[in-house]
Length: 285
Image 1 (spheres, one colour):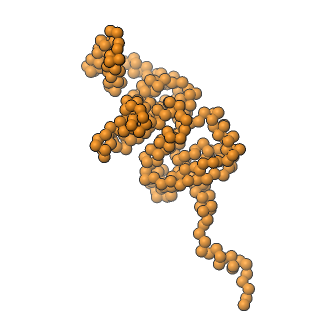
Image 2 (tube, one colour):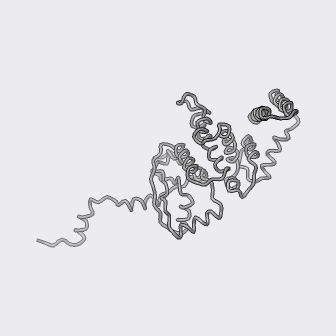
Image 3 (cartoon, helix red, strand yellow):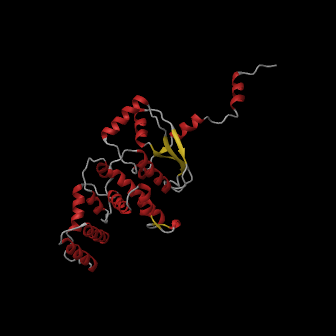
C-alpha cells in the first residue's frame, strides 16, 4: 500500500474543520467600529485618570473584555446595507490604549434590536459602574430621560397606564421627578456644546454653572457652541431682548406674582410657590 504524502494527510484532517474561535475573534477585532454618538455617551476621564488607566493596563493587561454590539450597518444607522458590523459599546478608553500600545484584549459580543436600546444600555451601565461626579450622574440621567421621551414620542409610557417618564425614572434612580426633568435640561444644554467643551465641563476642567447650562438648553442653535464667550453672547440675547419683543400676559402675570410673594418674610410654602412660578417662567421663556 502506497504511503500517503504529508500534505495529503493534512488536507484530510483539516478539510472539515471550521475556523477556530480564536481566528473568529481576531477577525471581529479587525472590524471594530466606533460610533461617535455612542462614544460621547461615556463621561470622559480626566488626564490623570486616563494616564493611570494606561499604566495599569501596561502593568497588568486588560482585565475586563470589551463589549461589542454585533449587528448590521442599517440597524446601527451607519448606512442602508445589511453588511455585518461590530460596534464598540463599552471599553473605548481601553480600546484606544490597546491600539496605541499594540496590546491584546478579549471581547464580549452582545445583541440589541436597535441603536436606541444600545444607548439605554450604555447609560445604565455607566450609572451603575463608575464613581461619577454629580454633574456626570445628572448628565447621564438626563440623557436617559431625553432618550425615553424620544422613543415614546413624549413624556409618557403608553404601555404603563400613561405613567410619566420622569416619575418612572425618578423611582428607578431614587430622586424626585423634578430632578429628572432638570437633568433633562442639563443634558440638553450640554449637548448644544461642542464635544471638547462638553468634555471639559464634565471633567471639571471648565467651570460652568448648572443654571447656565440649563439656560443653554432653551437656546435655538444651528451649530455647537465652542466657547464660554459664545455662550455668554447667546444668553445675553435672552437676558436683554430687543425692545420690540413684547412679553406675553402670562409672563407678566407670573413675574408680578413672584414679586408679590417675595415682598414679605418668606416661609417654606412661600419659597415653594416662588419656585413653582419660576419653573413655569423657564418653560415659557
